[in-house]
Length: 297
Image (cartoon, rainbow, N blue to C red; front, side, top):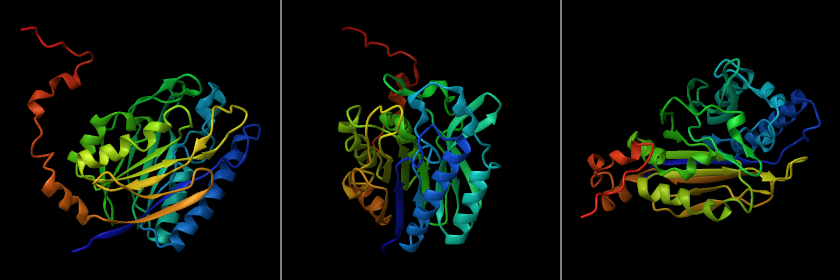
């Protein structure tokens, strides 16, 4: 019997350049996304994910303490509270990526997960923090996540979150599967020429290896004054078979919608018994800081 959930992804360009004040930038991006969320609601989306750091530009293109002022508490900050009202209004689960302040000077790249009745279910903090030249100076802004790989039981599905650079690490993707994820969302900000060739490779591989759906999001456009490259969009959903089943454009603001039949998860796992055939007792080197070469015969 089909258990179909209508899911959505929002990809969007930055609304205002960085020479505006931070309150102006944040207000413009939130207003833009509220209109896109309304579009998703009209399309009867049940679970929606926004892009990484959705209420501003990808400011990690520079190292400037100015951007610390975009932080908020989660769940007590204004953006999470606003999205709780929006989620309840539309009976929609919303994954809301924000710049979180745990305490003064301690910041995380975070996604709040809000259920369809507006209740706050919890948050995921990005684990893997890049510091990549040029223009991805995230260690200046974020502390590595410390809350594990939580799966959230929402009204419509069991939802996991993995944020941007996390997608290069299969270990957390596997843990999300072990924790029961049916749909894993990866809100991202990545540019052409850096890892675009991996964009449609790694996450379908996660979906196939772990037998769940993945929703991958990337913003669009170029962001001044940094111009680190083109955020190329191409957000997509892929199935537990590792096949892309819906994909957005490269250069337009868009609400991508797909109907995901969660019964496919069981169908795939009956054939590919990856969880049954795991050998966790052999995987100890994965938790070591450095690998140990096998002894020579």
